[in-house]
Length: 343
Ligand code: NAD
Ligand code: UD1
Image (spheres, rainbow, N blue to C red):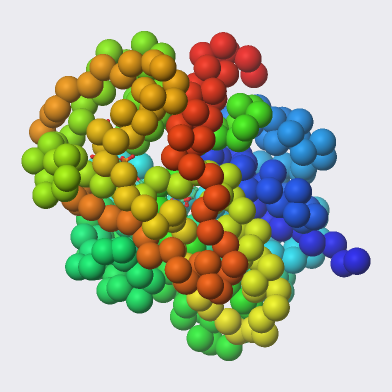
């Protein structure tokens, strides 16, 4: 059988590392390209430990053509590219927009050029539900209008999606999807890999686990005066293992198509959960209290978003299997691994 080598940019990161594990399980051969701007090398060792494979690592910047050329020279032909590598801190992107455009748009451009030049037939792009802005209708479907992005980070996702779509419109024999992730949470059941927030976490669940662990004093719940049942914001939290599996499904789907081909899928559970709902569920499944206080709304937050998950189910045969309880339990197990300092 022909080799099924997949170039996983950002494969040392949170979603990329879990996807590398799922790729091995599904018979693919992931090759990680990462510059460790938001991750640590030991995660690659953990991916190797979980999979029992010497998953290759190329250290380099995916926005730099010479770094990418080195990967192709060393590894030869690739069956696909999954392009995770990006900077993702929304607030930071407002303060440093050019750095975000350079990294995220430059990274997408370089990886598309590589797909073109080295004839890589399959391409999966990590997009975000942020492209929907504040949706007019819920659950939000893939054909909902793409709105003005609330941040340069969101803008980079919109631009990158358009780059991919227009690249395919030029008639290249590439098959591609953009996956619009909702809110990934949770960790691998081994508790060997998980999300590694650098500094004070901005996202809810890492802040919850760090507060439960006593690293942070109190969780601030940003606003309880939204028009939602308990007044706090609603999001669609998806287990990272389910999210990783969606990438494998997407590749299988693309393999059956003829290029050029492009499609877009939401990757969410289809269910919304409030901030206070997350706190309560976390306390229930772990037995650990999370001190919290109600704070002012965070600027840029929308009240409510959750996915219409029907298209991914119908077309990819993928749907989320794991519960919110399992996700939060695994986030807590991972927090304990991190606390133990074992690397
Ligand atoms: P992450 O920061 O954990 O992983 C990203 C990885 O990419 C890191 O290992 C980082 O070192 C690497 N990287 C960044 N720029 C690079 C470059 N120029 N060259 C090589 N490596 C580079 O983030 P994540 O949560 O795993 O997110 C992965 C992707 O999913 C990103 O594109 C992100 O925008 C997107 N996404 C994430 C979320 C989320 O909530 N985590 C939601 C929607 C979309
Ligand atoms: C954010 C980004 C989104 C990005 C995603 C992944 C915004 C507006 N959106 O999603 O573009 O793809 O991160 O990086 O920034 N909350 C608290 N207290 C906290 C932290 C969060 O109450 O300490 C609340 C937030 O107000 C929100 C919910 O928890 O209602 C989830 O927040 P977060 O985890 O930051 O994700 P998003 O804002 O949905």
